[in-house]
Image: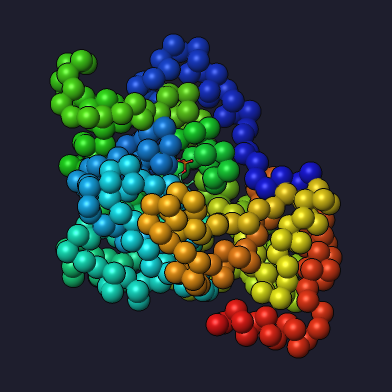
Length: 385
Ligand SMILES: *Cc1c(COP(=O)(O)O)cnc(C)c1O
């Protein structure tokens, strides 16, 4: 089986972890501080607060920005569920805008129509690594007095007009699950220029302790969202290779683009000209006249791992139950989600493996396409509605 993703861990990185184990300082030690400093330097923010997952980091920011019961946050339904769940933890409501059919990012032009008295923030997600147009998001936020949280969990190292994802708003979040560009096993980080936000996050991740107070002095409701020094040591070593990793992933993406560009029925990723890409996943999209479900089955059968990516958040059972969303509420998201497929994408994938993936995709796409041109046209027409 050619896997969908695979972490890339060097011997040097294994040694770094092993050294922490030998040191006896496994938590809240020097590696955590060093990792935070290095992340802040890389992203270009004053502060970085590491924690045990990207989801925890998002949750802490919702708390730090005092977003609570009854408040609304404008975001995208085409994302990993954590970017909306973080609001539910505090009783706030994710308010969705549909996406742009080309970039798959939230459609900026629809944000203002969704702003109400209860709107507190905008939470854009840099989907698959491609940054949202942050000039526009910031302009809208400023005009309406809203906070901005950048979910950059898929976009470490990506840039919008030369600025790093996560550094263009009140605060951003990066994540380090093993399928991300770099990993700490499990892990996440809040990046921000705000001392207040950083201080609150230090406290929230560590049981609501006061900073510089006694160990058993808890001044607010906090969590155990800490990152271990074992994870941090792995993160430090991985981050040292980030540019090399981004370049390698670009190479893999270029190979896929070159080999798949003329295949009928497949839409390749579209990048905005202001974007420097750090590829998280490689996602292709099938035209509506290709049966994506059948392609998926055939690829899995031939040993090529792949996955529909994403499934729309508003149609997840939790969200239909809570908010009564139904099919048709966000048509572009649904159309895109119905056709996308993430294919094997990792640093160490070989050109031979890439060729196998491409061959199998071509075969499957041909087989799963509706052959009759008239029926195809009808399907396309229905799709456009
Ligand atoms: C990975 C990811 C997260 C965080 O996931 P964790 O598993 O909690 O680290 C959040 N948002 C998006 C869009 C992601 O892809």
